[in-house]
Length: 247
Ligand code: ZN
Image (tube, rainbow, N blue to C red; front, side):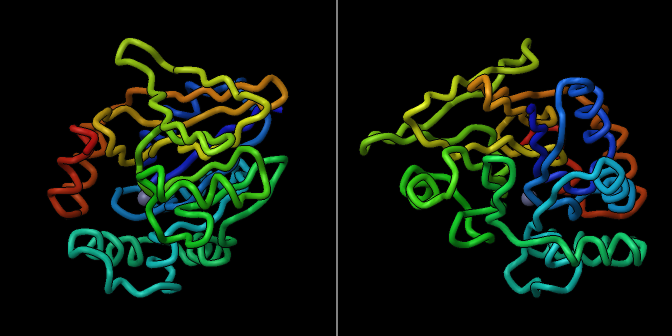
């Protein structure tokens, strides 16, 4: 079973289409770690695509904010403006689907899915200390998380916590991580719609746990086309510009 792992799509249909083209015929079923919408110009298209694919999806903080399950007090003004715009754009059926998304952690097919941290879906996991709870307490050996928009992760065995710097170089499409049978893993596929780890290419992962391998992918997409749609929608300029730098 090869699992396509999507996260932080953020209403970017051009990036999602590039990912699905690159991953074509390489996966058996798909999961999504949340933040389907928010920031980008295509909330209806991206939600529709996930629904068509039958992707097993948990909610992210932006999905909660857009559907009114969370207030936007903690959002910065730019993120809040995008939430308000998204809310006004989404058709009612997609809105209902988003508001019914389950909360992580969700166990499925031998892995666990979370948006942020294992104990708190809205918390960021950047450091080994923050990763420890997830590594120790998850019900699966391999747990996938999103929210930070940084591709990579952590592994753990016998008090040895390793930070995994696993990202394909600019000339490569993917980098493969070998899953050691005795270690535990907390892995982030990176963000499709708004990468923040310095590589503007759309990020995702493909896991084949029968063969003990997780591939971390990056694919280029037409960033300018997305920026153009964002400007016509009057989405905040900082959100438009960050796509080109991947920060
Ligand atoms: Zn996000």
